[in-house]
Image 1: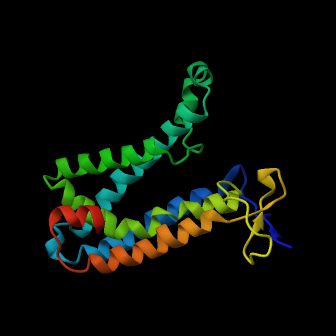
Image 2: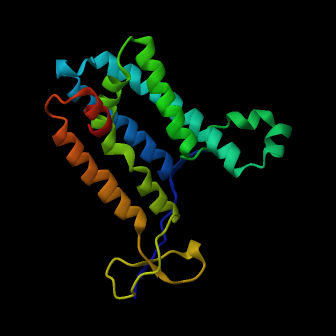
Length: 208
């Protein structure tokens, strides 16, 4: 019999403050970027200092938060609600990762590169090498939340799982974990090893 998903999306509460696992995944991702980015900044050929890593993290956090909140407002609306309650647009506790967050992150990287007179490809090279570790960490949050489950699986599959949120009581693939393992851990290992040595700027920004 496949296991039934029963995880609590709330990690812990402190009075009125509720901390969710999904939010913690973002925090872990930022921390990993900071640690790994500083390791990579020791290579002077990258053109990024330890202070640059700190500042790029700040720019990136603003980009992700603003873009994530914008995506929540646009896609989860309704817009009429936010027009009637405009201050809720700034309720950053309710945010989600959308293409808007990815786009705003790119804009933040471009702005950082422009303000520091650095090549966007140089910035992208470090961001890919250090950021790949946390790129799919949010899939763990999706798994804990019981969302973005996979297609129906063979009940005999040892890791098949029933997601009550699906409403059909059928065993499914935990696709969130697949993505975390393949697009997260495996991709990070490949990019980290690839980026150990100097590469052409364009190749580095796309692949390292």
